[in-house]
Image 1 (cartoon, one colour):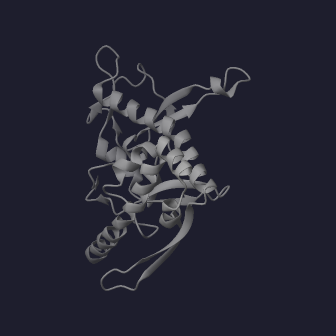
Image 2 (cartoon, helix red, strand yellow; image 1 turned 45 degrees about the vertical axis):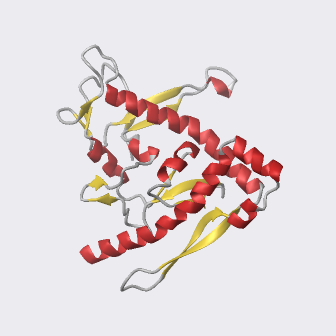
Image 3 (cartoon, helix red, strand yellow; image 1 turned 180 degrees about the vertical axis):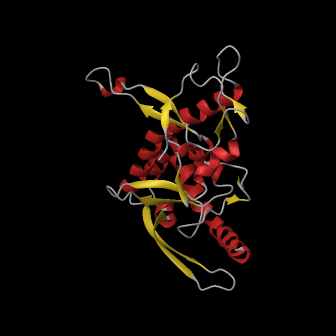
Length: 243
């Protein structure tokens, strides 16, 4: 479990972060939640689908990082092996916590930046400094704060995106069949994508509504991202041969 504490410019003035080591806490992830704003960036390198939460069956948009439950195919040779990095990976070792609202209005909740002190990338000698000599954020920490802000903003928009697609009946289950050289065909269920036939059949008003919210572009991007599944299969095959 992460050891989260409030980021403090006095207590943590000498801390540094080695980025690749910070990302290593995600090396066993095989899927990762993504926000609406990053879909069009990640589609260049990753397959993006929906899954359902175990708690309440709500659809969540995720990027697939592997095709077996124990192997992240984007983590190779001790580093994240892709140009684009999902926000939930790139923000490491920082998190956002919500403080209790100051009154009856939940909107008064304040976002608090936290750091995971047990993350292996958090060090005192090597890596990027968090604060400068004046106690101000370094460019590195400013970049991390922007990632966190995009995540916080994107969480609500992503939920509206999936709810709207589900309302229109555009989300349907998919079964993946991945054939790797020298191995039996693997079948995977429990994943969902966008029904392209239904998406194209939407009336003009519904399509315009999706487009005005940025949902239409994201939906088409998710559909096209499924072409990366075979790339994952080739990565898995290469990893199996090296094992």
